[in-house]
Length: 305
Image 1: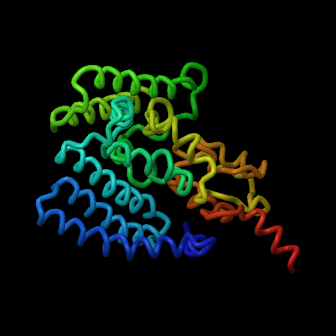
Image 2 (image 1 turned 90 degrees about the horizontal axis):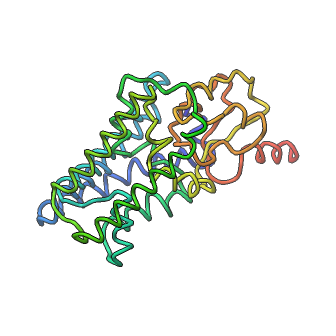
């Protein structure tokens, strides 16, 4: 994401605004919550959200070789905040808790969190949380296993359904048993299971994002809710030299180059907006944008001229 691409379609202005507004809102709120004793975990989560602002500014203006390091800092600050909120305040935010609350007909934090991050939010911003704020991904991206040999077919293509089924089964069993759970211990068990599954799968498949591709239940839903997102990666097809670097660097095995040549939408369900393809494109053909495709803008501009 160069300075030029940051200024296209309002993305640069949005980054700058978030960088300024996030700490101004989140840090005072965190201090107030901490002083009033309303939850140490929530205060940490808000502090982490505020910290993402200046870290995102650091990413935006970092040299190309350091951009992904800055992105991981943004990812870690948001992910760690969510993780600490869950563990310290004993609040379960994962999808099985969302299903459990729905079964019980009970309101809870997991309902709001899932609606914002997995169901409604992605319609606007795509899978930005997966690339910039997931507590599992912040660890997975530091594992020494690489990005994987490519998307696996056959049995693995149906694995996301297994993830959903496991979450639903866990929710039904928990709802039928003790109802809505509380306590750091139960939340810690859920966190441990998720981490164990994602790390084991990463090493087994030699792929940092294997869990995200094949087993994450939220990822299964995000494939559909993020497709119409306003924030997405787009391309100037005429500028593409068909080198294929964009596809090679994609951690989610999105066939970026093929979609560029075919003039189809790149951010189509699996893209986590990590910006690796944008940063690696030698011709600057890929950009991150809000709204209409840049291809359409290019055609429109040529007609006007």
